[in-house]
Structure formats: C-alpha cells, structure tokens
Image (cartoon, rainbow, N blue to C red; front, side, top):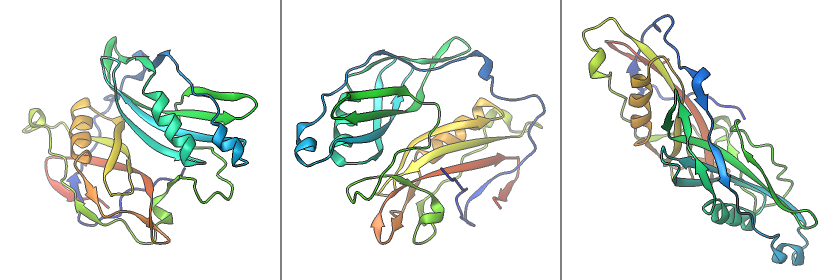
Length: 243
C-alpha cells in the first residue's frame, strides 16, 4: 500500500530536531492476542450465486481492558463477506497488548478467508496494514485507495493542529510523531494510531488531534471511497508549516 503525507499547505505543526536516544521502546512490547475465536459457516447464498471464495479484512480497536471498542471494514471481495467478518469479530475475546508490562490500546487488522469447500478461516491478527486481497473484477468489492488515486487532492473541513505538550514548554525538548489513519467514505478519520514517536506525549498530542479531523469525502471516479494516510508531525517551540 502506498502512503503519502497530507498535501495541505494550510497544515501547520511544530518542527524540531529529535532528541538523540529518545525512541519508542518496542523491546518490551507484547502484541494483542486472541483468546477465543468464533467463525461463521460459508454463506450458502454465495454458493447459489456462483461465488465460491472470497476475503474480508476488518480493523479492530481493542482497549487496555481487552474490550473490542471499534471495528472498521477495511476491504472485502463481496459485501456479504464484509458483513460476516464485522459480525463475527465482535464475538471474539482478546488479551490486550502490553508495553513495558502495562496493558495498552491496540489497533490491528484481521483477515477472514471464505472458501465453500474449506470453510471459513482466519489467519489471525496481522502486523501489516496493507491488504493482499485479490479483488478481481467484482463491482461489489471494497478496497482502500491511496491519496494518489483520488480524483482531486484531499480537502480538509476541520484540521486542528496538535498542541505542543505543556510539560515541554520552556524547555529544549522537541520531537516528532507519525500517525497512520483511514479516511472513510464520509470524510471521517478512522482507526488513527501512532506508528512512531520520539516521546509518548508527542504521540498522544498528534493522535488526539487527528481523531477530530474531518475531510470532504475522498472520490475515485466520482464515487466516495476510503483511503489510508500517514502523517508525520514535527513539534518545536515555534510554529512552522509542514513542507
């Protein structure tokens, strides 16, 4: 999947140098785990329609208690497969991810594979966000597009810049944070998560800002679609525009 930063001359952020040695500590990270997995039967209606296989990917948000708090249908080869993936993932139970021994919220993709002979199976929680589905020629499929494929550049409706963390004001501390997120067919940001940060407070500030961003619906050939975007924020004591 190709990503590119938001093309917005109006987007202003803090710019600065990353303090050496300040990085996210992934050596003590424990990934999200599935405790109980419930899978559907292959839908007979698909067989009757002459459809014998398909796929669906959902993105899940599991909080620090292990509760599933949000599901986003990223892609599917047929709406029925997407509907079943959305329905059955809500029956799963999880053990939350942990960072340095403390439970944390995690956002991950889960793939469902449908086969009328093999049944329905899942390859489990995935580390990568890109989808490898074969969409074929189906007009009913859904996939995530890149910003480069849109009819026009993204047009923001609401895009508030993240504030510089108060605890770092009047210090020489500066940093960066990168947020990966979807923009759905309505222009709403979905499943934002921090992929990199020089300090957790910069990541939190960037994440809280992106959660409230709003855009005009992204269009491909005049039809609303969802896209994936990666945005890097630079935090400094003075405002500068993102290039």
